[in-house]
Length: 270
Image (cartoon, rainbow, N blue to C red; front, side, top):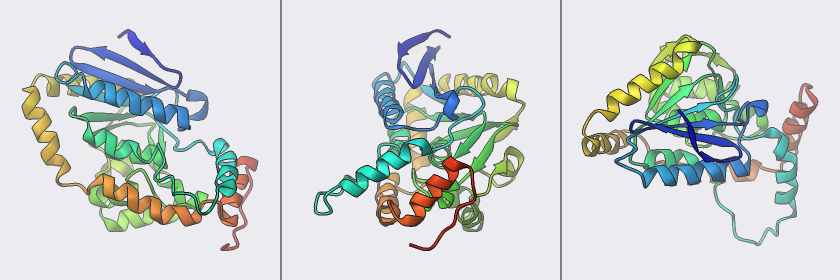
């Protein structure tokens, strides 16, 4: 497939009623920064406007990772900006990355996540927000937010429990542990696990099978399926309200600094 539109941090390819979005910051395990989030929003809007020519979307990651979440390297600067903001100024609302989850649900095309490596934090939320998830044997999953002194966002707080049950959601969200693909399959987080070299062929085969069905019926099925899940627009607002008081706290600064310095954090509850 030939790349038709050039972006800095993502790639978009099209073939036979199918589009493949590749998160393309492999040196950062495809971690989200603001620019990458804006590009992904832009391409989702573009693809939504192409329906029914483009009927199915696949999202995957370049290199060894799917998406490791928000770029921790950017966090110190963002926390400094938050600290400088006038407390009386309007709340900026949920982040661009958080809003990707409902955007994936809102486009008319079904979205298949081809999880090729680590899906952590917001990257986990992005994968869970897709309609179908295929994982390679190398895939790993983590609701790592608590390790950064944050709460699950990008829809994770609700979708995780809807898919795997409240107990598994609590375990993942309270520990921040990393789980392998077979574990994720056993808990209902992914539809199938395949060898790494079969991941994209399997995802594309599934996409073509879906695309061969009547486009309007497929769109209607996606709309009905969304009815079984929480309203992500409301979820994102709730997540933001829970997360905002934690941003810029001493513990969050320590979590980020300890990660960057590759040492154990020392939390004080402040």
